[in-house]
Image (cartoon, rainbow, N blue to C red; front, side, top):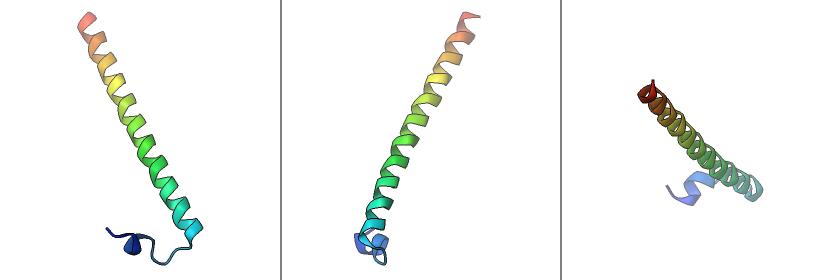
Length: 50
């Protein structure tokens, strides 16, 4: 997707804010995925020890 299609009608400040929010969202999604994997791993370990 080109920059113009994505941010074409926006003011520069709004486009920057959107980009920052998208980056933060991607980071939060990665952190959530890591946490889910950690929980899953811990549950597997507990099940094996029981």
